[in-house]
Length: 479
Image 1 (cartoon, rainbow, N blue to C red):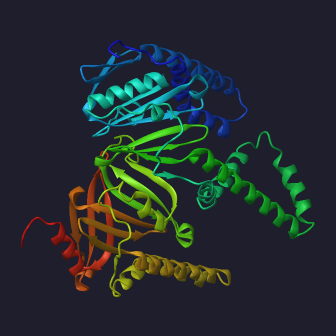
Image 2 (image 1 turned 90 degrees about the horizontal axis):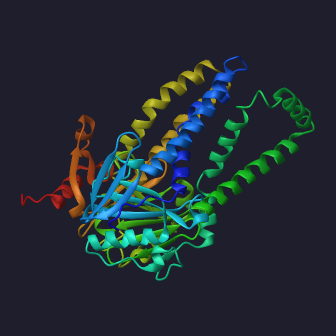
Image 3 (image 1 turned 90 degrees about the vertical axis):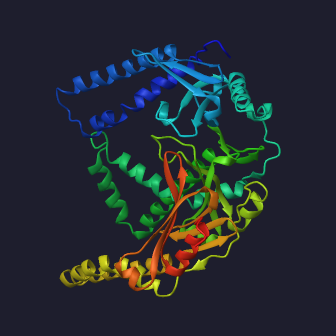
């Protein structure tokens, strides 16, 4: 692979679409806010010119882009007017992710996304994105990178998106269905449809529609109930379908030094996670999934992108029974133990949790209840709900030390438990304000490297003696 190579011509279309996506916001502003005036011709002409410019830029950027492996480096040359060169040492490459998008699949192509140890501020926030290359070229590139890092060559089965063999986990269809049902995606679908619907007042006769609706509604509440039920049901099915398309065929494989995630029906993705770059494992549960005993598992990686702050947090298990996590990763995520008993907060911490919520909800609720009777009394429900949430946060919080592992748990709405190995912790902070000091409480923060920033865990109002025990466990001092 020493000769410069261009991407497949499909990359020109991908580049053009990327350019057009940048014009969506001004196009949408014109469509939703524009008026029927003499300026409309100018706006439409500008829109057409923008699309044509995006198509030309896509072709030129494809023509000017080349890549090659030479001198133990991945060398990229690109730029339409200003020629740019980027040389990436192969040993710095941490992961090579592969995607078969809707545009690539009909031509037997894939997109390759390369991440390095420190992340990058390059194309799409990654060090390199090869938007359309053949599977054979992708396999050769992966093998060259693996050889440059003194790793074993990647198997042909994995490189070609063949059937996964030796998977340590395959997500069952029932979990996909449950994931879509509990994701909250139905609310997103309904909100998007309503926002879309109300932007076309020039084309939809709202007065006539709502007048007809009033006539139908006058027939009784039964019709309204049925309409709402079927609307929610349709949104629910759309959310489930979206999850199944995105996470269908979900499997996790493991090589000597990597975890490899394969997922997707229409757009197939392969995500590699180097084991040595995993800084922390976090288990998250929203209230509904917590009630059913399910959770999602993420890992914080030392790789990632400068522009995309969330690229270093990778979903490892979208949905799984809580008690199965230890069994799935036993022998694969070395030194991590998920069935650990956490030390709860002391009882006096509850006052602090209640104070934080009630100090901001009781005064405004009292004012509303006093001035807007009788319905204003409903505002008193806000402090009541806040007190329940504060108690739930207090009950969920905790910490634990087991061997070389620190576990920290907190709740906002959902519960998050972070597991960090001692040798991955960058620093531990213990903080006390005046009120905490009087109650012998403290806040504990554990930081670990993640992408271009830091990640970790935090617990509020733990026993000060417990915070000092965590500090002594982490500190290298013998005192």
